[in-house]
Image (cartoon, rainbow, N blue to C red):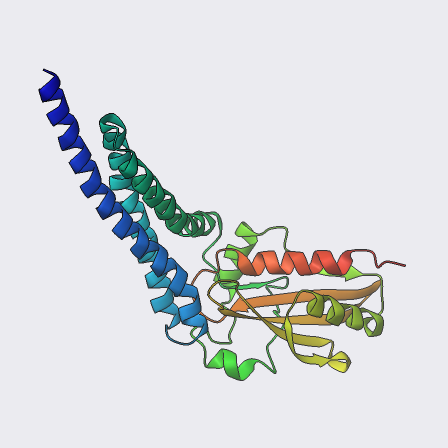
Length: 258
């Protein structure tokens, strides 16, 4: 009986070792894919769609690797194969770490409307002037999507409205420019006479470029600030442009230190 029990334990140990090798290989591939997807696009080796495809595939491989890793842990524990326990636990950690960004992206996409051009003025969006040429050459173009996009935005971001500043435009504009630079935007054009500031920003991991235009106009009690933030690629921005506008308006409306 003891000999049979030993044989069963040995078989489980061998199976756990095989599963551990598979899980480690898949986890390594998934981690490598995620690690290369962002820099690959930033350095120009991968186009936007290829970078996203590599990222998504690597995340799915990470999810797949978690299955044999968890199975191997269970078998190795019953067989007391501690080396396989350690190896499969490492594979599980790497696999989940590789899959986590994809799951976070899917969750963000599910929570945000499928939009890539967001503005505080959907009836008369601030136009791109200095950035017109690069936007016209991009996947998403320069034109605003019209009434359908405006209605979708109002459903998704009903609180996204213009900002009223109790400052005349000539005093509000320097504050707008200072806030834009403080947020790390690359200011492309600042034209106080037209009340227009244009800038670009890049996403953290992939380095995708989004363009921003801020419009400052006179209002009865000071100035009205409108912002438009639009992605150059992708149907959905996963809520990035709306968050950017909210953050900018919050920084702009914060009291200045004395």
